[in-house]
Length: 234
Ligand SMILES: NC(=O)c1ccc[n+]([C@@H]2O[C@H](COP(=O)([O-])OP(=O)(O)OC[C@H]3O[C@@H](n4cnc5c(N)ncnc54)[C@H](OP(=O)(O)O)[C@@H]3O)[C@@H](O)[C@H]2O)c1
Image (cartoon, rainbow, N blue to C red; front, side):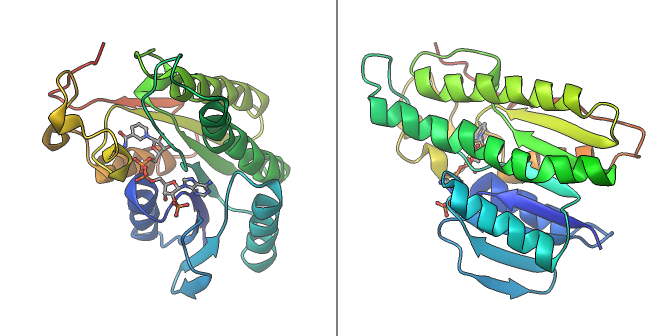
């Protein structure tokens, strides 16, 4: 049976991706990683508490998955944090926290698994980027730095794995209505896409499913999604 590992799968996009992969007719076993998950298993599901910013947590979780289930066929680097602060407002702690979760963690996960996919000659690394991986919005100093970096890392991993049978996809959504927006409260602020117009977590999950279910000879390298009614904030 195919194995998928999804980071940040306790809620939002990661949870929707995990559920969509588990619901595939091919019947994947889905491993979910997040800090607030309990260590438990159900039919075709394993939950592992893991802080992906901690190298020891990532190594422990990946070692366990490989020992108990095998090298994952699909890895979705999804865990992320988001806040809006101008350059002047962004503290060192803000910046390094965003870097640790949004960029260093996907590196740790990719480094722990992609070489094993390469050795096997198959596998699919999906990276959840953002519209902020190709457009710089005011207030996104830290977030855009991490997401542009993530796109760079995706491009390099794509090139390094190009002849190996391993596929890589960057999914870059515009605003998606998840808890990540709660602190921003976009409905109360002019210039922001209203939550009712945002993408749904399931829309992003459908894009991931599209990428990973293509025939072996097709590599979907990048998918960009935007809400139809969209306010690009200045
Ligand atoms: N929502 C949007 O508008 C949007 C748009 C474009 C891209 N994205 C990207 O999509 C991804 C998911 O966002 P979302 O909207 O679903 O956010 P969310 O609802 O806030 O969920 C974030 C997920 O990441 C996990 N997470 C955060 N820090 C973690 C850590 N240190 N270790 C392990 N897990 C961690 C959280 O789990 P725990 O708290 O349980 O650890 C949670 O499952 C992020 O990379 C985000 O940048 C979101």
